Amino acid sequence: MLVELRGRGINFRFEKVEEDGQSYFVARSVDYTRGTIITSGATIEELEHNIKDAIFTAFEVPARFCHPALINIKGDLFEKQNQLVHVTT
Image (cartoon, rainbow, N blue to C red; front, side):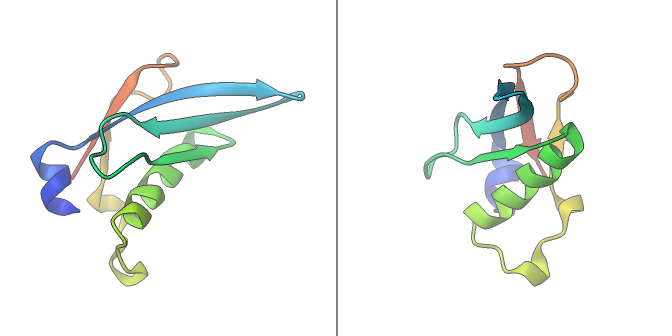
């Protein structure tokens, strides 16, 4: 995981979804070579946490090694929808 994130990182596109009177945020990887990483959160803070958790899960990192501080999200999740955020270590 560290080698891939340090080398080129993973880009995510995020958007706010509104349905049935509820809203939440969804993030989907756009260039993960092993498939797609998708996660969601009720708030931006929860989405950021869930992106990190989804990356650890995608790389099958054991729970004892999952330290959210290892993953950096570059880009402002608050700016505008459908933008890319870059995830690195």
